[in-house]
Image (cartoon, rainbow, N blue to C red; front, side, top):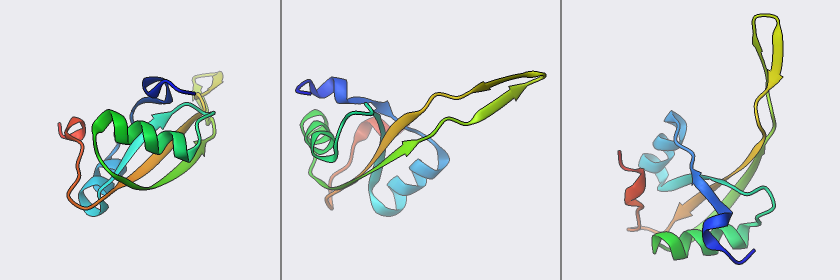
Amino acid sequence: MTKLYEIIKGPHITERSMALIESSNKYTFKVVPSANKVEIKNAVEKIFNVKVEEVHTVNVKPRTKRVGRYEGKTSAYKKAICKLAEGNKIDAFNI
């Protein structure tokens, strides 16, 4: 994968991810399942012009959901938690 904007799908914004930003300067993104840590690090550094110290990835499995008598599954995805160097921040997450 050479296209930076194809690796990162978008931010993963939840209460927990916002708490990670405030407490330890860690930003969470949804990424392509085939992306590895090196590709994710390079993409975040080049797109947002920041220094990434470490990357953790999580494969989120689908969960079963019910609406009445119908069952379905949520979609599976991969998320990356990127810790930025001291003094760096991404303004796109500030709402």
